[in-house]
Image (cartoon, rainbow, N blue to C red; front, side, top):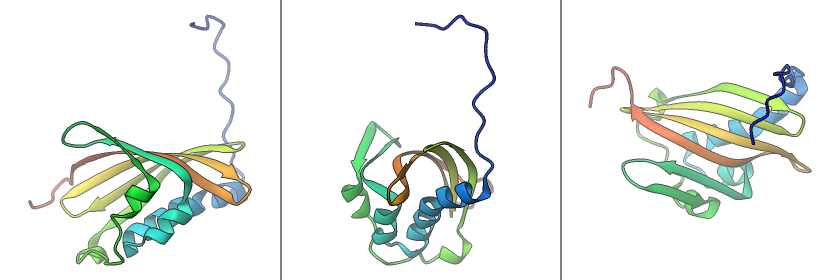
Length: 140
């Protein structure tokens, strides 16, 4: 059903630096997990029930956190010093948040979107989806 009422102002996101810093923690763990190729950082960042959904070169995939963590072997990439990762957007309202993170990994750039939730243990990533594209200016 479509709401035909006049548009109201959106609920404002928080600008509280302490709340924003707390919500960044799982994103920073995620980035550290990539940098160190470490599954434990990923497990600390995500809810145990998190799903990672994407479509890359074929059908839609949906992974559990356990399956995703199998990809990490504590062997940082040879080009780790050249890789760049940034938290581009973080929007928090109450106990819910969304974020966009860009990972430039050599010839590929990954744009990740996250849904986060505040838990009794702090903020956690509830779900992730991403899009991969060639890095602009990268030599193949």
